Image (tube, rainbow, N blue to C red; front, side):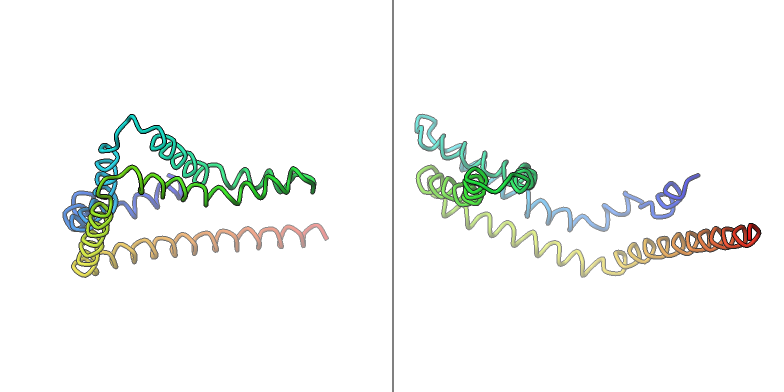
Length: 183
């Protein structure tokens, strides 16, 4: 059995107990992540499909977010590799505008597309606040349980580090001993 497999077996959680103890944390996660998405999608459903400028704003916003999340680091690295010149200057400037363009698309989308978006914003804020309160209460209730899980993980890491240290000491001693025999 490999060290990785042993570590997994030692630090394995009893998921049934974990979910029983952490249900409030999971409820909080629903309020923080899922409920705001539902509110946003519900607001998006109210947009009239015949408004072309709203569709373009939505497409621009989604494209901008996709770029920022998935492609910006790679593209910036490629641009830095280019020779200094007009193209590099232009592309660097264009890349720095993308976050602002994305925010502009979002502002246009909110301003023109969402009916009663101010209510949705307050709904999102309230939902996320409820989620944070749930997760804080969960931590207060389960502090000892979470501390025990963390201690078990730290102890396993320490034991494996000590074993690796001992293995390296033995290997170094063998190399030193082997080096002296050749002299």
